[in-house]
Every structure is written in structure tokens, then in C-alpha cells.
Image (cartoon, one colour):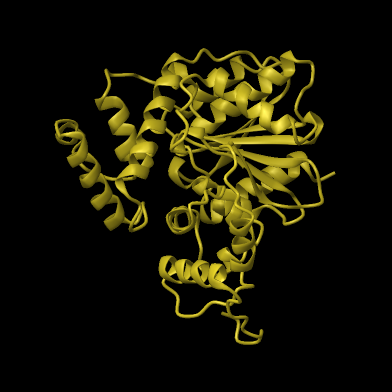
Length: 349
């Protein structure tokens, strides 16, 4: 807590309980009710734990965006008093801004927006940012199993709030396929988006698909959770044992927060598997405008992948090399490089 600002204590029981939840999840000793969640150590993963705890305590299911936009204990308590329990949605407000177009981040295989934290921080604060997360992460919804249907749903939510000319989509990894499909669908509607950038995504034709569950499990373990466990041994485990093993290993590795829970992990698994299967079935369309691809210079098969993307962009493809690997391309200092590419493409005028 900033010692220079006056401490504001809870004023009623709702603020008292919300403050206690934040203190427990974030493991901090003090908290004023007007301090913003991410300013006191919050992260996308800890946001999930806070929202789960709020649901258990109050029976109110707040959206993920309830902890963005510099949300405080005071703000969250107000939302709880209002009894928010709205229908699930994918579009999440992340940060307001005055300089359009809005940056739209499309979730990767995991379905959540945690990967974009560094990139959003690196984009100038004047740029408004929103995100699209997978519906299947909400226990009330089934995951999408088809990329065109997923893209159409996301566009319905997005265009109900923004004009297509105000939208720039960026998709990392699997999210690049969804972003590309969204841009193509809007082109077919004769209402093209302001722009679209693919962030180190491989074209589906390059994927090799052994029979599930081993292939999907390998993606979950190695790519999404970043673990070096024996996938063949994991595939032989009963479902409950598999979840417990993955939870324990991911919490120890720091790729999932403590207390993530088997139910939430199962929803993530369902989303990852659905996205893997959707990728295997996806036939990439042709985009009629100039394409923009951020790629990592060290990637195996980079030249072939770039040529494959170029063949699906009839007006050409501009390529931007980032000197790192796939996992780090929108993290740390590399997020600053990618943010600079996006800024020069869509806002620097």
C-alpha cells in the first residue's frame, strides 16, 4: 500500500469480506478499499481465485472484467450489492482509452487472456483494450468446437459495441486462427475490420495430428501448462488422478496458482481439447486485404509457415521478426517489441 495516501477501511460487511478475500488470495498484510487490484499484486490467475471466492461467499458470479479497469474493493463490493449474475459472455473490457481503434486480444488455446498481460501493459495507455475469452471457461457453457462458429459468436459480441472500422484484432498462437477467421467473415459481410495482426501462429496445414487423447494431452501439458512430464504415462492415468497430478505439478512450477482447483482445471482441459480438435478440422480461408504476421526468427519451419500464410493473403503479407521463441513472443521485453509493431501499424498516424 502507498504510505503517502490515507488508508480507507471497509465501511460495511460486503467491503469487509471482499477485502479479506483479496488479502488472502494476494497474501498481502494491508489493503485500502480504494487500491486497484493489479496495483497491489493481482494477476490474471489470482483474479480467477478472487472471483471464485466471491461466488462462494455471496452467490454472485462476477465477470472477469470486474477486476480490470483499476477495480478496487469498493468497486467490487458495489457490483456484489447490485447482484450481478449476468449471462456468460466472451468480450471482456480490459482497459479504457481515448484513442481508437480498440485493440481486441483473442485468447490462445487455454481460452483465457493471461498471456496478454505484458502486451497490454506495453501498449500505450491511450489505446482501449478488450479481450475475447473462451465461453467454456464458465461452468454454465460448453466450449466452441468449430473456429468459424466461434469467430461468428465473437463478432456478434464485438460489433454490438464497436463499429468494424474501430476494431483491430490481434491473435496469439491459436488466437491467430480465430482472428484471421473473424477478419475474413467481416470481409464477406462487406464490413471489413480496421485491422488484424497474427501473432506467431502456425497454419493448420503444418500440424500433425496423432490420435487423441495423446496429441491433445501433449499440447495441454507441454504448451499450455509448460510441464516436462511423461505424456504417455499421464495418458494412462484415471481422470481424477490426471487432474491431481497436473494441478500439483503446475502449482509447483508456478504455471497455475495455488488453489486453482480440479473443476476449473477440467474446464480448461475441455477448452484446450476442443480448440485442438477445432484446429484439426479448420480449413483456412483467403483474406482479401494485406495481412500482418509477427513471427519468431528462430522458429523451425518459419519460412514454410510464412509462405503458407502468404498464400492465404491475396493482397500480400507483411512479416515482422521478433528475436525470441514462441512462448515468450508477447512476454517481457518482447511484448514491448510487439506493442511497437502494433502501434506503428494501427495508431501512429
